[in-house]
Length: 178
Image (tube, rainbow, N blue to C red; front, side, top):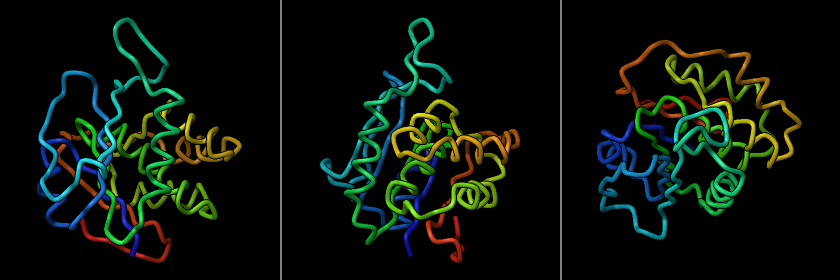
């Protein structure tokens, strides 16, 4: 079973151990330092520094950039899928769910965007994927704005405290426990 585990920063060690992950993507702004769980080797950890904003930049904040999303896509495609992939951000609500969608389509390009977005909503009523990260992934993967439309279709997630990790199964018929 191919899974992507989405987590807030505060629960990455727990999720890494519970799901026996070996690969991890961190999407955090500068200054958010943390300890990588020991079971994840440094070369299997991608750190992307970005703020959770819907534009390229705003004042001192920098949103997701093309080059970062290209790195995410390349990292996802190099993931062997023998163990789940852990993707996290500060709260596990915006950047990491967006990155999970992009990673899923990078490794399973035959996936229907709307079905994937509905699976995301089923897995997490709180996820509100970062629109800029979704749009950049959509463009870089050649999805012709279908991913962007699918995310708009599921709408904004419910309010959350950022303590609700979830698991996104990549195969439509699979279910997963958080």
